[in-house]
Image 1: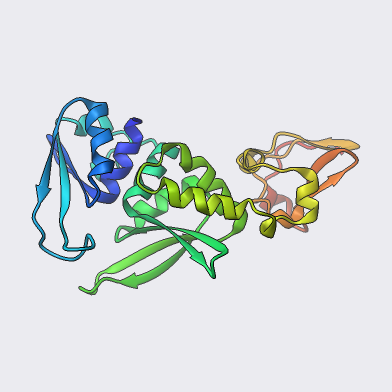
Image 2: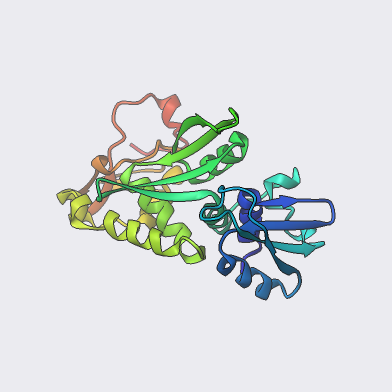
Length: 252
């Protein structure tokens, strides 16, 4: 069990205190692996008090003494977070995430929270997503970080999947749909692009097409701008200024 996964779950479905942490969830199945991995703490049943957790409102709490210091570098609620990774994203998604499959064939991924800076930290890490703002029954702002772009959703689903617990099956289903022929354009199928190739879009080290260009900080590539040319997979960034592209080196 990754420490950062637990931090993500605390940020989404828990509380951070000066000498302990508490994680609450309606599914005990998500808390047991954490308890077994840490080797300390206790799980307790919380009596129903609202319908917020579904069903009769019953849910469980996991209390872990002194573990707040362990997750501090990842936990936004600690006020001292300096690190973030995919296990953290998975933990947050297991707590406050969801998959919406529009018309049975268009998967969208969502991260939910009332804390927009917390969601913005996630958005900056995954480098995609748009905000939808609603309100809670109490009138408090409530934010959805929505990922509807096909390639972005596929990357996020692929990266989170190894670390998910509660929502693993629904993300597997979404990933299967995203990888189906419905979503494959002929030129992309020919070039056999994978999520791993897109993962490094923010620092493309080398693009070859007769001449060499080493470009840093290119804008995020979309599916339509990849092509297979003379045996090389290339990306056409379109008409953009040198300043926007932030070109570091080029040989032309």
